[in-house]
Image 1 (cartoon, helix red, strand yellow):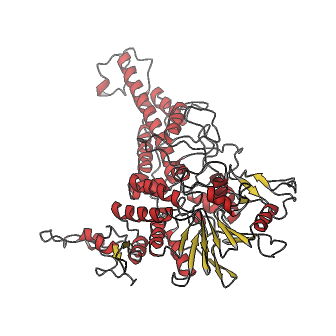
Image 2 (cartoon, rainbow, N blue to C red):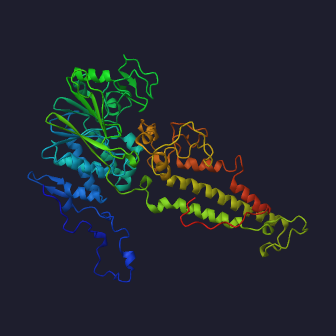
Image 3 (tube, helix red, strand yellow):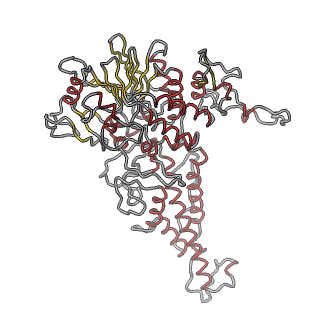
Length: 604
């Protein structure tokens, strides 16, 4: 099909078209009318009209315009709900008719995890070659963690509609309801589209095939092999049209991993300090919390039984974008190749992306670096909502500062005065009894306490707004550092401030260790349908439920529970700084010096 060219220009904005009777804008200052950062193109503000979205070729069937979509998504444009549902439903219907195991002929480009990195997906398609002379196989995990999962899904599905025989998509462990609710994809769908679009995505996930066979030699899967997978015929009996269970063949295909020290399992490793028994082929996968580690012997026996050459898989982030494991003793070819196609994963892993190109019985690995992409605030918040805790924190800080400048004479309770009055009594206190004056001063104290509680709540919300990732730093048994909330533990659990990322995550190994908790199958109960819920980047892994004061490592605590806990703990142990200040003011003790001026860029 011919390339798409928008006759209105690449940055046409139909929302800014001036109506015939519109007032002239000549009075508006030039600096306000112009875009402040000229080097960054503005997002497309409107969905494409149907005339641009739908195209048809010789068969007369309407299809999405993939050239227009590529440019539209690159500029953060969105579709109408009807257009998104059209892509999802048509692709679901097509994939539902495909078998559990696809048979693909070379040449083929094999791609690993994408994880919502749309701008890196464009690099993959540029490096991988065109569809006219090349097949594509994607191994799953198109969504979650990144901020452009729905764009990746819609564009890949659109390519599938245009190239049904050369474009193949497999299911990953993140293509399910459980993980998309726990991580970011559901929140992304609800923010950019609607519940109907999210539910259509879930239906499409169940239609994705599970495995592929390239030239009858290479077994391709997202996760790994299983003790229940003896021959390839066993795949025919798997019911893939369901939410993946926590055990069984379907689970293993999506979750299994090669064991650490693959090929040298008897040697000590971080996960198995004593090594493992050489006779064992399957070990419980403690990293994932489900499925198995499979050993080198298990992989070799699976390949020999099915007369295969090797296994291509994704599922694990790789520093160089790929890892070739120990070769088989007979064919002298790597028994397993893991490929990961999301460079600089989560914007902190510092890894390269890679794809496998198989052509003329040769294997070539193509590596690439990350592409720049637009920034999203955590949890798809807008700037106004994200800034509210900062504003509230500063307001309460100023209120406390105003109350802190009261002089000793203004609030001193002079017992030597028989009528309860002194020379500092205000006009409002003249004619009041000592009991009324005491009540009035108690009201002042209560207001100070209320402002103090407000400050603690806003400070907590503000710390949550500063959190930028889902990574976790620190050891679970680490002591709470000074300044952390009582009972909370390490304050950056699951979430790390930007400065902490730059300081503490310097390498791929640092990032992988920090992200280890997010590699597990999560124990997560979704919130009620009428509740917005708390997304993972606003959870703390080592906190208990709101009713649990001790905390459980498997049950995240909601933000509302954290606020409630902070208020309940007000005044414990050291009495609280705010309470001591209130007592000073109410009792007439010497107040602190006048507050210093706030810095222009100060946020603490």
